[in-house]
Length: 70
Image 1 (cartoon, rainbow, N blue to C red):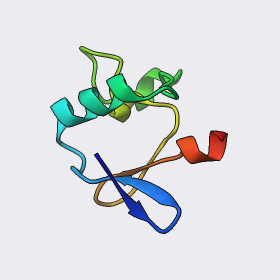
Image 2 (image 1 turned 30 degrees about the horizontal axis):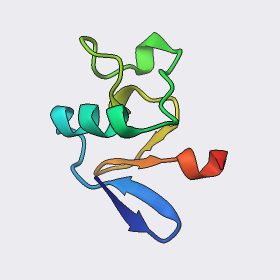
Image 3 (image 1 turned 180 degrees about the vertical axis):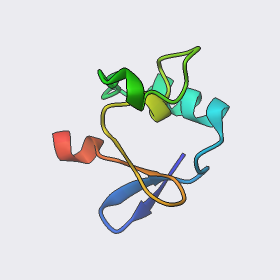
Image 4 (image 1 turned 90 degrees about the vertical axis):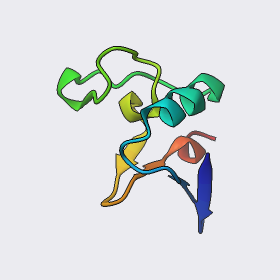
């Protein structure tokens, strides 16, 4: 569900593919809910990449920063 952009993992479905973001978060061992409620995008289901502490938004999508944890 991610494209490699150099060393970065970019979510290839963009900012409005809520189901794909839920599926990706369910498979991720590094998911951690962002503690800042103002930063949460999906209010009905917390386990979404859109609500992850390790996502960094870009103009088209977001970059997953989980590689920085390894």
